[in-house]
Image (cartoon, rainbow, N blue to C red; front, side, top):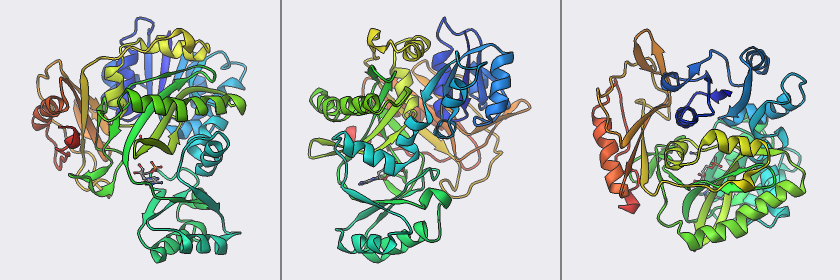
Length: 425
Ligand code: AMP
Ligand code: GLY
């Protein structure tokens, strides 16, 4: 079948790499894609949220499946756009409906969903300009640190952890009164700070049945030793040693099953990924966020470890037959290390020419994130540039292999964390 993948990051390169391995995949297109997706699919110059252009393309290219990588088109209702259109309604769309995407698109919606379904999460209250004074009072009596979350999508910048009430009140005012994140911060969730270790859990659901994919741990800070500013993610490991069978059983019982039951109970159409951001507090899982898509860079370790045919898996998802599927996982470890542009996550330059190693061992994969093909050269085109994933017998083994590849990659201002997976070595 002909497949259209929407998006342009490392996540999409990893998905494209996996999709094109399937014998069910005839033509694979990525819109807009990057220089990496161009190696395993046909890039289409079309924005991932230009629904009218996507419609025309799907009709003319006889697309049978659309896989949605990023959250933006989902939150804007790409699933519903297809299902409500006569010419598109039979195309399989992998991703939730607009209502389902609210699990990521609205922190307040996600918190209410967790409360209604008994899913463990940090205690919280939500505030707007109308009850601003109560919000200030709530912060004053709250123990520190306290977490402020803009309700809507804020390009990964909407969560602020404050150490002092004065700082928290100032931030709260910026968000609600000055609309620091535009409409996204008209409403703010103020919640308890949880101390523990984070874990990314990935579930694929058809709205009734579900399968659990390999888990991963993401390294969000720019600096080694988890220091400095938050980024989209500087690396990831899978499997995660502390996510043993006993802990994952708890996650399943206390988080995954109630989440799927909640989706069913609320009649939410959901045929896609649920990415559950968890924090393990004294051996108990707490949900810090839901995302309605795969993680990036987590996809760059999850897809390489997934043995199932991804097109088959998505077809079963669309047909609501995920109960017929058993997930098979590569027993090897996988670690991805992200090479970024100098200055990221602040401002950075683009267009730096990238030189690649002439040969890479079969244990390593180079996924492109922010890259672009210009004539016969590949240049940087984003903050996160390349994700180098390696398989190995241990985290250390994987890291050493990825480092070896990264040492042979060059562009002006290349930076990567050398300590990904440090606590598991
Ligand atoms: P998010 O934008 O929702 O992914 O949140 C960004 C990061 O903020 C998370 O990955 C956590 O590291 C941190 N975070 C969010 N909520 C909490 C919380 N309640 N307690 C501690 N850390 C949190
Ligand atoms: N790596 C975290 C995310 O994709 O949101």
